[in-house]
Length: 132
Ligand code: HEM
Image 1 (cartoon, rainbow, N blue to C red):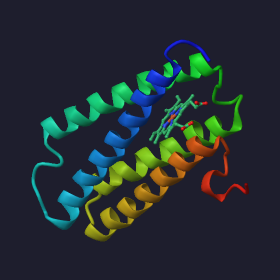
Image 2: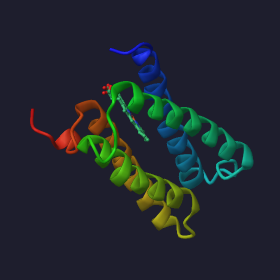
Image 3: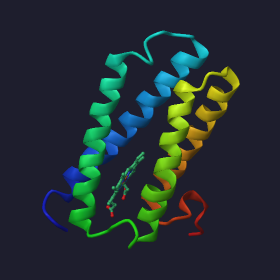
Image 4: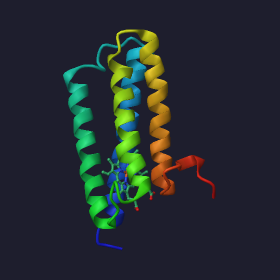
């Protein structure tokens, strides 16, 4: 395997967990505790910083492993289909006006994140639903 593959993957996975964990913390604090910090500039900047690390490591991984969206089906499913859906749901979990809509979006975002994670682990577009 190419140089630094394991190091880059470790950074990518750590950033993915930090990104999902922080997004979940913000959504829970906003929706269940009615906290005021989740939409603040500082919280948004922290989330941009984590996601920049996540995405940079992701691009490096595609180069190092020579796996690309639109070429490898699991990456197409992960990046082209599920990632936009996850971002959309995460956005509405924090921004929707109606409380019930924010809760529904939060539940959807959690499910989408878990599915993305399982797609990455299995290298299959079916993720956790793949046989074997
Ligand atoms: C919410 C966003 C993301 C999550 C939760 C996530 C999660 C993961 C995880 C857990 C792995 C390790 C899989 C393993 O153990 O083999 C991984 C690997 C990888 N991810 Fe991501 N990822 C995300 C975003 C992205 C994006 C945006 C891209 C591409 C632009 C990407 C490309 C890759 C590649 C190429 C690998 C290497 C797989 C291999 O070792 O063969 N990821 N991702």
